[in-house]
Amino acid sequence: MPSLGLQTDLMFSRYAGRVEDVGRYVVITTPHNPNYYFGNYLLLKKPPQAGQWGDLELDFARYVGAPPRIKHFAFQWRVSGDEDGADMNGFMQRGYEYMECAVLTAKRSMLSEPQNINADIDVRMLQSEQDWDAWYELELQERDVDQPGEEYVAFLNGVRDMYRSMIAAGRGDWFGAFQQGELVGSVGLFFDERIGRFQNVLTKSSHRSQGICHTLVHAVAKAGFDRADTLVMVADENYHAARIYESLGFQPSERQASLCRRNDGESKSGEDSGVEASKPE
Image (cartoon, rainbow, N blue to C red):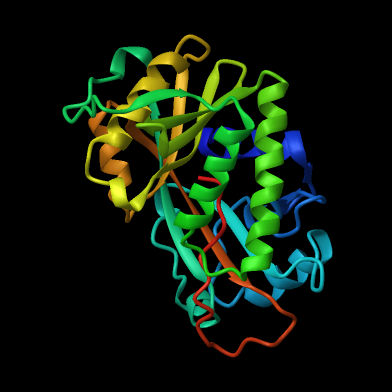
């Protein structure tokens, strides 16, 4: 698959779940974590068309699952060329959240020193159970998804176990930014041959705008080039984080988009579900 963003998405799915090409779609499932929205989705080979939701939802139920086990619909695809600007209004009226993400990449020669360095933080790998407990609490505290709490906890437990298993297998590491012993930021970096993919850049809300994200990402990227020729970051196009990564030398290389909504087994007639996708990035 030519897309670095989607290729590195599938790195996690292949490790912890199943990836199957069925012709019209690539089907991604994570059987042990049904609450992982973007671990259970259809990867479309072209953007969805207006009015196509009925067929897509039937195929999703067929290939991925349906309530009571799978309580969402999720679709993802690459945005390119004339496909840009596809009409998603019908999907959004049906309660879907539409998101476009920029795929940013960097080579070692492109990496720039951050202008806003936070010299008060210590950047290091998570190692102890105490470190991982702090990571877990930070993720819970800063979650911004409208997913029922019990389901979100199950999702978070599942991805934590996946990341820790990948780390034990030598596939990557998770890094924290510590200030006076407190975890105030974190990010994962995982590898597929000579490509590295960042996961879940997060700064504690009470510590934002202090250069923590710049300092953390730069330090981890610098170390990451010891294992990778190219580093990949996927960021919401409408969020300021993409500008932070660009200031460090990452450049937009492609775009991808997604649609997601909850599915509790009830018919949707246009109401807004307010769901935000539980993406690992």
